[in-house]
Amino acid sequence: MSDCVQRFLLENLDIRGAIVRLDTVWQQMLSGRHYPHRVAQLLGEMSATTLLLRNNLKQAGRLTIQLMGDGPISMLVIDCNESLHIRSMAKCLQQIESQSVSDLLGRGQLLLTLDMPAIHETYQSIVPMDGHNIAEIFEHYFKQSEQLPSRLFLITTEQFIFGLMLQKLPAADRLDPDGWTRIEAMTATLYDQTLLELATEEILIRLFHEETIRIFDAHTVHYGCQKNPAKIYAMLRLLGRKEVDSILKEFGEVIVNDEMCNHQYRLDALAVDALFREAESTLH
Image (tube, rainbow, N blue to C red):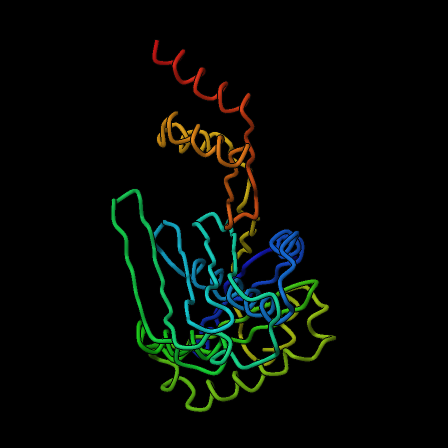
């Protein structure tokens, strides 16, 4: 199954994990973006990680992860809600050489935000970007925040993204002192291309064929961007007729860019007039 996240548990080892693969959704996330190869690669690795994190959370809410720095890639942003609707964006130079993550992002930080509207609360965590790649940066975050040894195995191609997360639970060493090391070594064989051609459940069975695996139901991932002109119109009404008319006079049209979803909304004089006439008729 593609475009899904699936949790699993190695019952006799007290090691839990999750696996994610995006095909169609990943193509939708890249459509029209024209990112340099290295930028798309990092965005894919972050997208897989965000889905693994969001699916592991018990709290309902929107998880937003940002990597911000002063390098050629100034920002990578992934946004995912509890229904696994995901969207993303990158801000970068048009020409990017294949450099290390630290060189590409420069000095910066990792920001994680969980917005929980139902209880009117927002959780935010800011940590330095510590690691040579996306997997190491988030493994360091797990070590600090959850205090659980964690490993991430991330793969990005133009066709799909793939991620597998392992977490060592408290009883793991008592149940099998060598279990964690053995499972890490087994998972490293993921980079065999023939293995990645299999369905996600089959991958888990092949990787951990000597272990007792409990595989939970898969959760479908969706592309989280849809055109929402009503939201744009409401924002323009808040700006007011005078301000919008001044923009119209200067540029000949009003252009609103939704960078997160790569949408552009354009309104000419007739559209602006209709927008505010509708607002006035509603008030009366």
